[in-house]
Length: 166
Image 1 (spheres, rainbow, N blue to C red):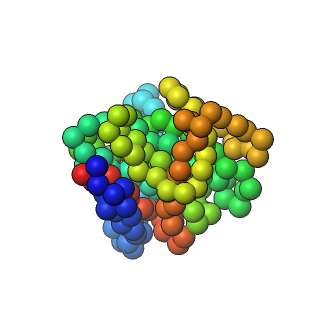
Image 2: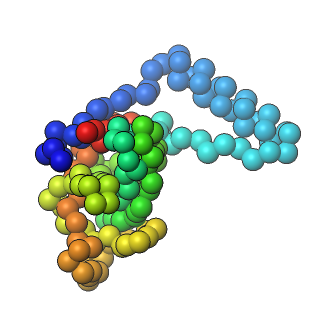
């Protein structure tokens, strides 16, 4: 496989554009109200416009499924780091998640038996998963579950896209 850095593009996306954002929010509120009146459940509302949060999109441009693990602060200003996985991203699709944004977020992705994308920030994952925990200094794992996560610089961003490319 190619060098992981050549296959992953971090592309900032700023989704806060004046009147369009206001109209979109009004339409969202109207949709939620209509669904509640009809007895339905409201859709999940993206938190990307909330201060202290970032909407992340992880897009798989590979021919096989990619599995994603993430690490991020549990809330803005916190010292607690969440480590969670595995999010399944099918070929030619994206996975979106909104998380607290304290500047850095970490990701590790893999295609079993074919390769991975990561970096130098070593964290324990759990296999087969799924898993979600607050990372602690005394948490240990076997060597095969200690993997290098890559940094996503989200400082000042309300949205960010990470692409996994061939």
